[in-house]
Image 1 (cartoon, rainbow, N blue to C red):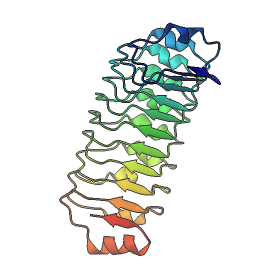
Image 2: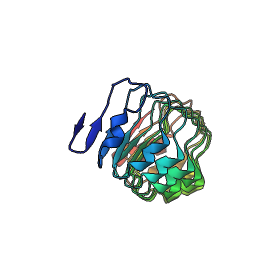
Image 3: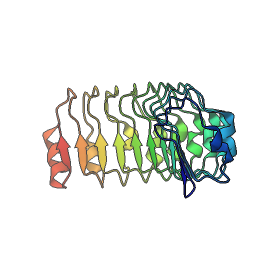
Length: 241
């Protein structure tokens, strides 16, 4: 289906990218979600007018390096719910991209070039096998939301302290034994989700986060110090524990 620059094959379940996709003169959005795709052809890199690409809910084990040729992508890139084990370094060429979803894959790492995505406002990498994040993460100066639920993280890179626009941070169901020190002083962090980790203690500086509105500590074997709880609640922060 083609309309207003949108090519929509959602749930076509064709098992391949339809040939007529390449005949469109200048598509702006290509939707290939739920097509049982096992391969994304390198030819995808020729669709340089795209601002949105959705290949979520497929069977992809890799995406081609030519994905990085889509430098016009300035809205959404959906790669979630596939079988990806790595992402190409060329991803870093998508400097205008605003939203990236690579959740529900089998990723053990994210490329160092991630930090080149200067326009990225939201990153979703939940339910992968990540044990660490690249130090380049701190270069995502426009990042407002970071979703990392269901990985194997025990720490965040120190560079996270540079994420001055970060509002939402989901670290639920990882392996954190302590609240990452790199979060200290983040000026706009409003919601911090630490459910289902292995927290043993809580730092007093949590009460110093100036914009914090919700702190979720459920399903951790940790006591919230009375003074910390009082300080947070007095300034309007909801604490779930």
